[in-house]
Image 1 (cartoon, rainbow, N blue to C red):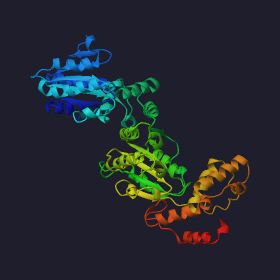
Image 2 (image 1 turned 180 degrees about the vertical axis):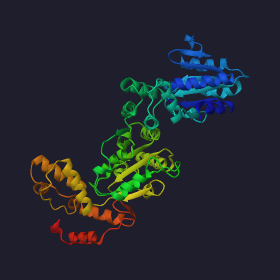
Image 3 (image 1 turned 60 degrees about the horizontal axis):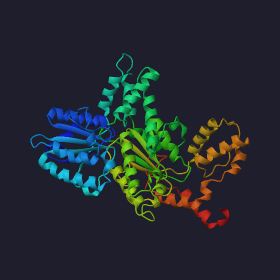
Image 4 (image 1 turned 30 degrees about the vertical axis):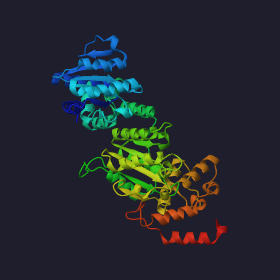
Length: 494
């Protein structure tokens, strides 16, 4: 529902206090003004710079530049026969005053008789406790796909300035989450640089938007699934779930996956490659960056980050090492802040309808509450074990080519090595200018340094998680169990 239609309903129902959350005040004012003209309602606006303006008049009332006086003057604008809408711009800045809050409360109650509607237009919702029950909150939504297309066609009016349908669809996908002014600027910048509308300038502005928020970062890498060895089942699952065309029912969108593995098995690399593989941006959520020093700030920043992710859809959202991210979910030492943030995130995981594919990674599933990985929050929980022989060969081939290493030399003994250790061996061989076998002497695998934790992780995942390497449920092999027992009986072997 548009802002104009939603606002009309509340005014007809005689809600005398409406808070509009908007970052585009001029567009919101334009819609409100248009509504008043259509319904023949009286329109007035106030801001700290120009004071009170009635009926769109450019002559400001200098005597009504004071916010308290503006509220008191609103009673004189009322008309029992015709509603009067008074829009107060950025008025949240003045609601710390007891006098203003009291005057506002009195005017909201009196507005039922005079049919004067107080509308506060602000980028955030900060309603004092005394006024919470009196206000109704309306969100001025960002432009949808149809509105973005209309903006683009209004900017690119010459022949050849608009791309073909396929590229134009990518431009509109890239524009999701921009304000109307931001979209106009991105399209105009693209015309200046490329003489046509492309997605490159749009992404540049979106990266700046994310940097300014400080809540998310955008990863747009060049490596796809070919840069990752193994995990064939996980690749097939995500590629099929996120295929751009041919989904049987486009209304049923994939939710995401939870990846569990020992360190160094490629979880983070998979997340980044997934975006390139399916043509989506990867948003990296740093929950540590959401923490604020003020009461309630962390929870508000969490909600804001989730709103940005919804607005950036379609995209991939990555939360790395999620068990460390929400380490305080039991409320120990932080007055329950982490628990409330975690609860907000869980609710969003379950209820969000945007096309955001969430990928969470974890090394220790026991530190997460059981409700985190339940069905309908993720499409699957995958376990990435240490690579088998076939997967190791594929990983060796990738990094031998990447580091330009001679293939004629012998490979070292890579028993129980992870993909990260294979890459480390290749990097050390190039860095030290020594053969791979000699470079391997500097590599101590995680399977040795953390044998007990890996054994515990495999035991937990067996029968509980999907296998990332082959279709079906992950089952721990008998060979892995016997290997673990031999290590435990002979401490000198560690």
